[in-house]
Length: 200
Image (cartoon, rainbow, N blue to C red; front, top):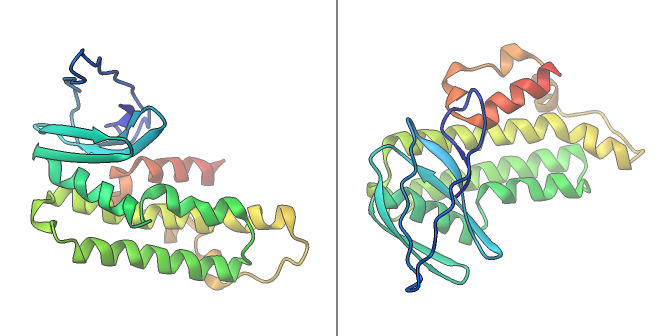
């Protein structure tokens, strides 16, 4: 269990290792004080995971498939289904890392992706199992990651393209802290990371 962050202000991720017994079972207690995000890694596979105080769930792993049951399992099954549908956090960064779209095209792509994540959340068949605090975190992180990528993309694009064009106003708006700072976003470690980047 890697990059488990339960204090978004410090943003320091912790690692916890579960020992596998001869029957390929494991048990682990992970101490957290508030909602925490991270990932579960085994072999060459990893998946996003979310933990909350009081969670007590079982994890079944088969190759690249993972399934959760028990108290607090719903949010992690959602994260896995989000991954399978190409909507997990890592997918957000693919277009940004390629740097091939013009800023206007990138804005359209990221706006569509952000909306697709929200649509998936709202249509998720197991939504009754999702804790309210998790739903709030997912919505906020969707917005925060979007803003982070929009802020950073023009510079990334300019490094490899000379045909730099005028930016759409959405890029310009995020230059100003007054359009970005929102205390409700402090729940997300990505938000604190973005603030640090902006100050830098």
